[in-house]
Length: 487
Image (cartoon, rainbow, N blue to C red; front, side, top):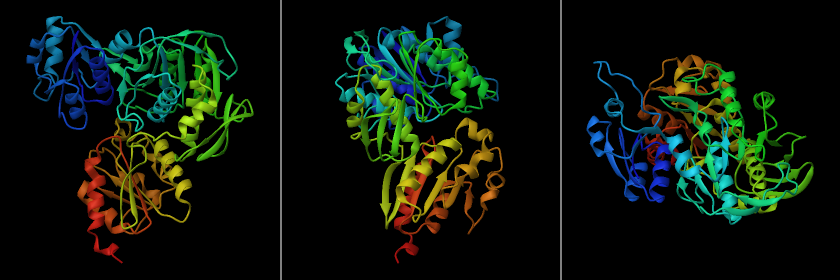
């Protein structure tokens, strides 16, 4: 079929476009501010891209319009539609659907879906799980909200043939062998589906293996409180069959409430001392325990307790499709992480600059805690961040920022676009030149502040869920030219 995707340059919709093209469909799409790298990736696949959401695109007459959740019925100040194409689709009675719905019907149907949900770590854990299944010879399909370095792409169809696999018991014990659908690993987002479907995306995926990695309040633009998000996770559990498995973080009270509200599948817990799956040792090298018995050992370059928990979740999920934990551990030893997850961007005169996607206070804290464990107490950590997500722009979690930044020696906040006072929020740290925290209204000022403060041996972590104005390269350039560092 011919599909035309509205909002094609988003990470999810771009991945969907790649899957559709690989499946043999003709794919076109539109977005505003079409830019690399996604635009380059899509054009390399032979996908025609159109700038903007003009109503004239209705003349393309595709079999279906696939609508991303960037699209709305919003009006501009002069009263004209922000998305004229959507209005034209509605007026014409043309066929349209959401991205998750199209994916469910055209790609996921008949496959063994392994869905990874949670507030944090979805992209990393999804990538780990896909890599484990790849190393086990299962050739999984996957759709990830990032680029796993082991694969170099964010999505692929994988082997479509059903596989005869020993489906292990959720706790890791032996189970019967039977034919399961070809595996497909997907990052399962709780954000809403589309302007016309306010359910979470993951409700469409119908997983047989569902990972609940963690759960706390986020997405303040669409959820009123944590209970509202827990309700969506409960809806996800209602779609998992009795023969399926729910892999759940045993340390999370919020997830315990979700399970207590109703679970009809077997459960494999991880993380807690009495969980089915637990770890013994430091995050960089640890034994994997199944009900207290060592079954594998993971030794890898990743840092942080959060990644140790991510690994346990992936190992437990892989066990549900018959992958022995020792095979999973061997795969994780060769796991190269995901682009923009503590990705080293360069070093100048002993100052190392990293790029990380962390944007929620808890993610910022766990990222910095992992780096601190890696570099030790003697090295300085400079945390550079922009509160860019809808939740952070609203200021809902601004009071948590000093807590999130505890492991940072210095913190630098980009304040453009904020409707709240970052100086006031960071006041417990001390704000201003010579203080522990500084704020900057623009990237040039931010880079100048960091370049002046940095010294050899520092680790500078730039954290944002956006492009951050190219701060990484600009910072490396500034550091290279900073005469204060020559000594």
